[in-house]
Image (cartoon, rainbow, N blue to C red; front, side, top):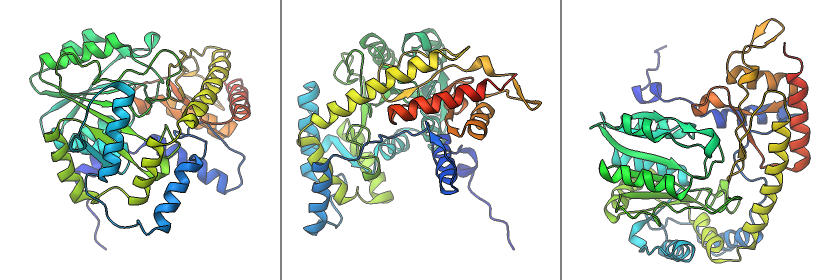
Length: 398
């Protein structure tokens, strides 16, 4: 029997730690284990009824065929109107590309912009897929640190020192996954200014735009006073609890959108028609559901951060948005259980899962050793029970 040889592309990319932890939680539940999942990166709410009904209507009316490759013109117009209402920015439909989720938008943007030998700035802690998207484009992610005490804003001295003649782009994400950090106007403006000086394209992941609890969401393009090339990638998944519908979109220069559409057309033809109809209902319908979900997330955030900061040796910065806490558990690295040393966040999360039956995500997977990502997209009781289990497990270490 011949041995399969996979491409270098497959061999160099890392698996998604977030999806891996979600799968482990599902496997445990399937085997009857009473597991608490604090790793989940999606809303626990159901999609609002008016959006579900739009999807049902699409199916009932036979709207189940291919659509235009860049997305339905009605949806792209609705996106343009939404952006204008939110930020005053004027886009035309040919500056919009609808995708099968924002993840595809980000991947396709990297494929369209980067080549072998290019370097792309990625800030740590980073969403696990950012450096992998860069690598899949045969480019090299250049990691720049951030300041956890200031909403994980960039270390600008380090940023300036790492820009070279090979640097072609910057990827930013505010509000952030995994930290929940919300960057200030000043920080984002500085990135735009530096990027313009070095002719870099900024890819701005703004999928948590509506989940800001302290201060206000900052649209990168709205404060772009430097005429920097900006691609804004957005999603309906987090705002409207539509993760499984898989609808995202990109806003940007018509030339770049056309290039991305060319690649996407060969990969997936178009985003699913039913999801696109539902997306129109989401963007043009009653927005009260968004405020209700945001309010509940804020209440849960306050509970979780309080509980985490009460754990001995743990430090957790108050996140300004999204639905993640990103505490530093370095205090517990080097401790032992049954003679085995826990020397990184992977082993600590494994220990918490094995002992407490609580699923979390190791910070090493986000480029942040010693940290752990917790999600508060769960009920208040689940948060309390989960953290209580974690505390009991930590007390067994020596």
